[in-house]
Length: 599
Image 1 (cartoon, helix red, strand yellow):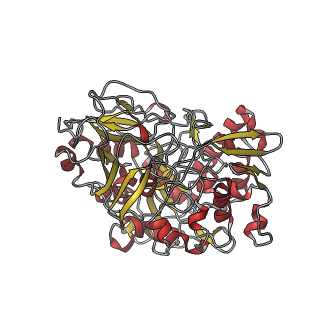
Image 2 (cartoon, rainbow, N blue to C red):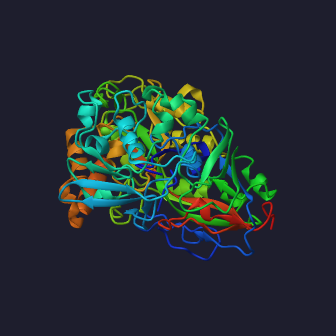
Image 3 (cartoon, rainbow, N blue to C red):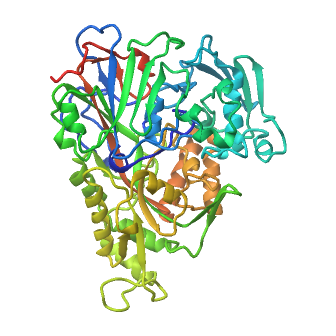
């Protein structure tokens, strides 16, 4: 994926899956049940392989059968600039390739469709397409296509969520966005295959995949006549998307399935497979479908049912640390779409920091990881996943289970049981009911939500499900993003993508800042991470650690679980590499038989 590969993770995914992302973990040979290492807050998939070789010769052509495990229809937004959730990200991987490859540290490398020449002193990035990079309709990918991505995201009519500080950091972007200019002065087309982008400031994060250099292009010849405000609903995006990846979209059944065929124009050569078919499969039936040999791969495989498929015949189970985490968020304000920034509300129901901290201490997330996820998850201490080992603060204590601390925090803050019913009133003595939004999907969604509510009840808080029920994935995120007044807290998950820089999720101008939290001190801490001073490694690490400590104390969101992800791969599949930084491409995949094997 490109830019920030942020993912809104869902039901089984929000409880089980990113956001898949690019990226480097060790290959291991023991395929026994996963172990969770809870040393310094880390969770590691240490007993799973990340590469599948499999015996047998690759047959000519063949169709890869892929299950996308979700209890909700996918949105079907085939655009790196416009998509919002991890399911669409998974679907795009086959056809909409990134411009750049990445190494095992998630840094941009030059093995992809384009090369990067970065000049730190001049604060410029020169991006050059390789010869032969071609859209799936046969038209060449050009510098104008790369420029068009910036023009769409920066346009005042843009409806997506990616216009943030990484774009306003481009020279002339804000003037273009405000309608003061018709072009972006900081981006120049050097030739048919090259653009140069000038930035106001540059920090090491800019060389991180997703860290500031946009890594996608849009087919301007196909989209130029579509109003930018209408792009997200257009047939060019929803029905007939084109990309320069190894496969091209042949047919979409909205919300249900996508069929791809080999892209004969692919710049690395025609893929080994003739077709790929991806179908939505509910979490409740995926194990039976795999046992019957219906699918080669299962994307977003639920880890809450791991025990039911850990000995699955005919498949290798790959495993790795996820670039994601689960969290509980508190609604602390609203999004101002005109200003393009968060507006905190000091009178919000959840504005009291002691209340938020108490709710964090009330949760035994290590027990959740063991009980609900067979040890494939563990309590999270930070909003930076441990896979980013250089900046993750393993020494941060975070919120461990401690009901004594929780009760004391509430007592000291004035949340007391006034009428003797074992439920606390607010500091003014008024009834306090906290509305909790949680997603439906998977076998444990309901019991996990019930566990959290019971945990909060044990410290005297009345927490009820919004609308009295679990919410469907798309409805959940629509309402959370709209700052629905019936939602005070919510349980969700973020796929961070390959860049741990937190401004895109928690910055004042980030629409993904769903808690709507912002303070001047927080702004300064985020700015330090992305400052030019951060070229000094010690400064960078210190800036990340200071932010993690601050945001943990403020608790606008509570990280709950670090995660591992599982990918079943059928024994007929050759050349699948799930290792971060491997530069695996779908064009390399082949199959050794006409149908998935059952043993």
